[in-house]
Length: 272
View (tube, rainbow, N blue to C red):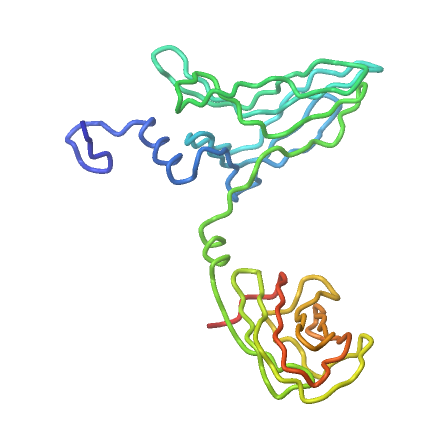
């Protein structure tokens, strides 16, 4: 029977299960730390204690909030042995279907060889599981020493970041040795260059700097990035720098030609 969840029913009727189902349907069945607060940042305090910072997470649709930092005790290691422990966020459904969540240290098995992670609970509460673990960190121990914790979670980016990744801008770029311009398109942080030109001159280049520069908003992340590779009767490539400078390699050969190029940029998105 269908039920209106987000509506007035004259009685309490919206359930945590329905809220979890909505979250899982929107965010998917993966587990995420949200991009707010400390994002569960970990600090090693001593040989047997770590502190987990504030944060919000969603595990199998269940929203868990940690409003204050929390200390967790790691069982002391043993001389000459190695061990992997896991810090997890554990969901549990107890008697009378009362649900809870807490941070837990799951102890691994000591070994003189290569340690492995301990087993965790993986049956989703969406599938009827009454205990479920979302791994947050691996804690490696070598003897009595705690090594560098290894994050095991993904941070879910906000919708504003998704929108930015789909934003599109375009401009044109005047090609060296030509009176023609070709199209530059940016989608998110990816830039595309392509088009057809007629070169007016010939000239052999060995990383010669061009007068033409790439416009702001379209400059590559990495120096010496191929931004325009020309085909046909040419052996001509243009390389972009992070400051917009373009260097040239090869000979345009006064040819009719097409070009292509794809690269990443860290520039601010150009205005519309």
